[in-house]
Length: 189
Image (spheres, helix red, strand yellow):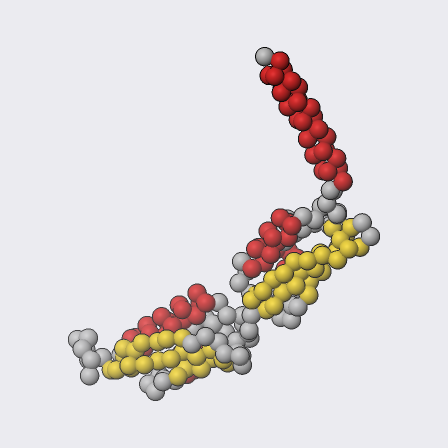
């Protein structure tokens, strides 16, 4: 029985010591406050849009934490405009300046219709939503391929449309193949 009493006393002493250690470490491990937030690497997208996306996550005067940096990075990546987003900080006295570094996706500089021998390129361009000088939206581009196929059908043709990834020059290519004229009853000539 004496062993149990000594053991419980030891457990209580260890618990008190652990509590003091945790209290001391949390007091010394205060997070630095955010003094400033800057955006770097944005050429086409305004910094204000990026800052607006993280305004509820990173605030001047609030503590900076790795969890907040991760949440801000994820929020910016969800915009779909960037290949890379990195959040870091620079020490400014006891506070930090948060640096949001982005690498923007390649903008669309040219839209090419390969294999289009039946309908004018201008007619196809009018049917799609993707525009030159915009950042590519993969979902919209897939929908545009479907719009081209529908336009061909409305014009009395059947065709298949594939899309190539945007090249290093910013060219987006819609590849049109198998364009054949439809007969009145839906058969192919």
